[in-house]
Image 1 (tube, rainbow, N blue to C red):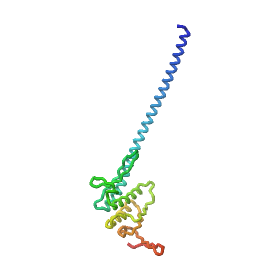
Image 2 (tube, one colour; image 1 turned 180 degrees about the vertical axis):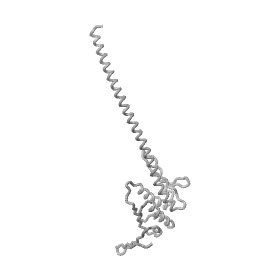
Image 3 (cartoon, rainbow, N blue to C red; image 1 turned 180 degrees about the horizontal axis):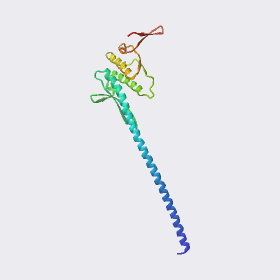
Image 4 (spheres, rainbow, N blue to C red; image 1 turned 90 degrees about the horizontal axis):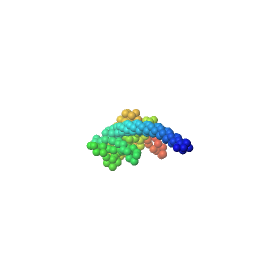
Length: 207
């Protein structure tokens, strides 16, 4: 074999060695990148697990606090009350809350399956529950304009007792505008407003 041919083969061999070394180097970089990506994905999975646990805990706390107040309201007013249930469901990639009434193990849609009085009481209690969950919480005063308007007259004294109970339990003040004398039975103070010739006169009523 001539020297020139040997030199040519040796040159090709060196070129191929160089290519092999480059490929080996690229494989090493790819392996490092794969490990980096794998570690990142593991971190993402761990973060996802933590977020899922936090979300579940938050949902459980929401369900407890909201259901507690709404069920208390229903039990205070009605002799055979519905229980209130808050259920979280995943729909279309989002978490939604179903508000349900429960009786004898059966679940009902409050709007279609119960009278307006029960819905009226539940919606009032939901408002109180949401106030309680605010952070930071707004001033501890709620103004109610003719509350419990769909409740039968015979149940209004129980509604008055409910307002008193929630006021004491939550340190929450209710300012109520109403024409119902039954609803103010438990009120701490009562003011009568009389309008004469476009002028309103406010006078405290002795209890």
